[in-house]
Amino acid sequence: MGAEDASNTSYGHGTLSGNCETQVVLNVYDLTPLNNYTYWFGFGIFHSGVEVHGKEYGFGAHDFPISGVFEVEPRSCPGFTYRCSLTLGPLNMPPSEFRTFVESMASEYHGDTYHLISKNCNHFTDDISWRLTGRKIPGWVNRLARLGALCSCLLPESLKVTTVKQLPEYHECIEEDGSESFATTSPRISTEFDEADQEKNLLPPNAGSGEVAFIKEAHN
Image (cartoon, rainbow, N blue to C red; front, side, top):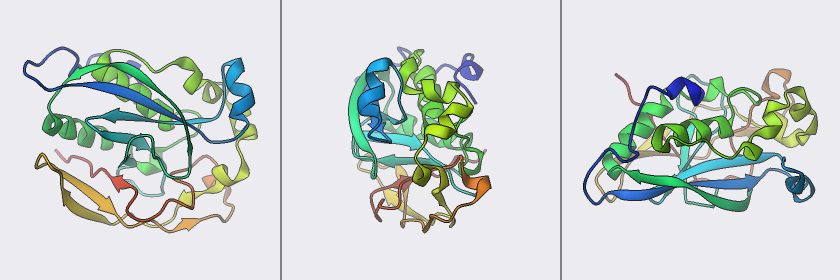
């Protein structure tokens, strides 16, 4: 689902009372050293995650019809090079309600629906930003995807062929505020070339165990 599809869905921007306000922050990462040159021309190959209530949320690919949404420590997504943070706007939503929101998002972003051009990590952050703040992420973050086939040509081969080949194993964790998250052991990563996998990427092979927690989707 893109940001425009969520235009009729309103969440936490200025709708709640109480002392639950936090900032929605976009954390941007480089996927290739080429960004050091292309960034100044307004495009590059980027990964992004949204930071809310002290955790960062991203979206990646695997081969299964379950959540591809994961959380990491802010500005520390393993395998990528952190570039910058951009404040998207305030959010007035308690952590428990935000957890419910993220689990709902996870049901719309399964790992096997990831597509480099039409539904990548930056589409996810654009969608979540729109729903929470009514604002989109800056256009340069995902500009290369909008150039279509050119994006696939520029991606490093290792990023194009790396996908999760094993169903993530969820382990229940209790957060400080009493909410639940689901950590997982590090999935087995395959670097064997597969045409069907060219447009998928979850995390690079050096993403270690314990660094990533997948969000288990909500079931109605």
